[in-house]
Image: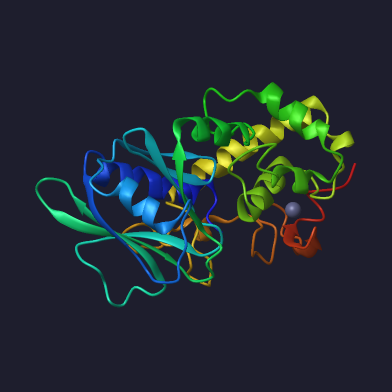
Length: 275
Ligand SMILES: [Zn+2]
């Protein structure tokens, strides 16, 4: 599933290439459904200029005049920018025809498992959407104190809380796993055992891990599901610390693999011990 580094890579590239362009037409494949409904979506979006492409947590947001298109890629969604519809692109759900005044191109939304969502939002709706998410570690205006309070407010293991987007936004299974390793915190540590200084180490570790992921343009796993808007893979998978690894990069102990809240979890039993 795309996490913040993948979403940011996609968002930045889309903004660079599509800002100021006009969506001249939209084609939705027969059975695919967008919100509120396909006809309203096409009528609203057709002919509109893209003012900016930004993100809210793991959502990709196209700002139009008074309206916003919000994409959530979920497990297998992709946004691909092409010169023309590429017949070899599989699972195409929506095609946006784009004109930037000099050149025409197409943006395709593809989704193999169709857990992704494409919705229209009003300005009010966007404000509500923002409220659903916790602070983002790489956001300079995000407050550590809010993160600390959010962590302590949920009685669960720390890994589960870091995955909860309402508590802290942007982290998914990959980046949480490596954040916990960098912070030397066992994934099963109960939140009541996370004091302020440990929370600060976690917050700073999350920032570092996310920034590394952004630098490497995201992580493409062996399923090769994540690609950027040009169809290229990320390279952060070559820099994982314990995620999918056999041995600890710090002490060479064999990495343990467990299921925690039904999510695959890797940790070093020597470096990450329960308090
Ligand atoms: Zn270790």
